[in-house]
Structure formats: structure tokens, C-alpha cells
Length: 153
Image (cartoon, rainbow, N blue to C red; front, side, top):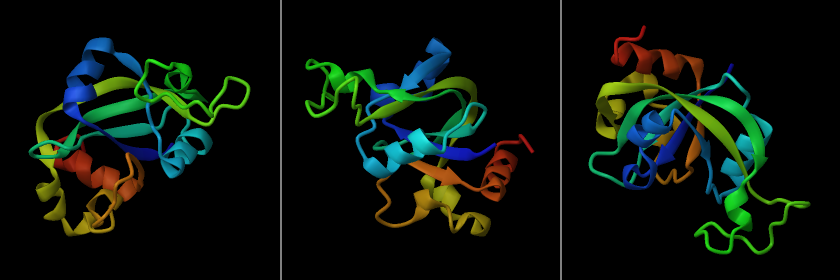
């Protein structure tokens, strides 16, 4: 099993939306590095830290689980979608998505600032200056530290 951090803006798709839906595609990823991680590395059963970005404060809102491995992102084929890509086709898709299932919403958000206060998380990719990826790997050690922070140890 692997661990991931996946970012989404709460106004667009937050942890509460996933909780309501229970399971949802993680679509609209338009960064090649993030796409490659979803397509080539994410597996059913992988655990996900659901991160609220572009908000005040940003931080980890809860946990999800990958329940379907990568498949073509249908938003790339829809001309009405903000994620439409005319260079992507069903026979040669450029973009992929995975399905995630809601597991837990934390009682309170673990803010980016709070994450920075834990020395054992100093190598976490989300804490690196300039990191803009919407999907990043999380080590087992980092996962355990975060689970202790929310009382899931």
C-alpha cells in the first residue's frame, strides 16, 4: 500500500462533497507529473490525505482511499468542460483519473502551518516551497505522524 496527498479547492470539491457522494472520480488533473503518478503508481487500497488548497487556512481535511485505478478522464473529451483537451481522444487519452472513496473527515483541519511545526514532516513535499503539484506521495512515516496528530495512531 502507498500513501498520497491529493489537493482540491474546497469550493470546487471538498471533503464534505466527497462525504456526500461517498465515492467520486478524481478528475481534472492537468499536470503531467501528477497524471503519471495517478496512472502508473496509484493502486486500489492506497490511502489519501485529502488536502484543501487555495483557501484560508490550507490543510489536510481528512482521508480517502483509492477504489479504482487510473482510467481515461472523461472531462478531457467534453467540449463544455473546463478540463476539455482537444488533443485527447478515447483511443489516445492524455489524461487519467482514479476513483476515491470517503473514509474520514478530521474533527479539525491540520493546517499547513501546523504541519510545518513537526520536524518529522520536514521532507513532506507539500511543505516544499514552490510545490504546486496537486498529487504528491507521502511516506509511511509521514502518514503515521499525521494519523497520530488526529488521534488515529
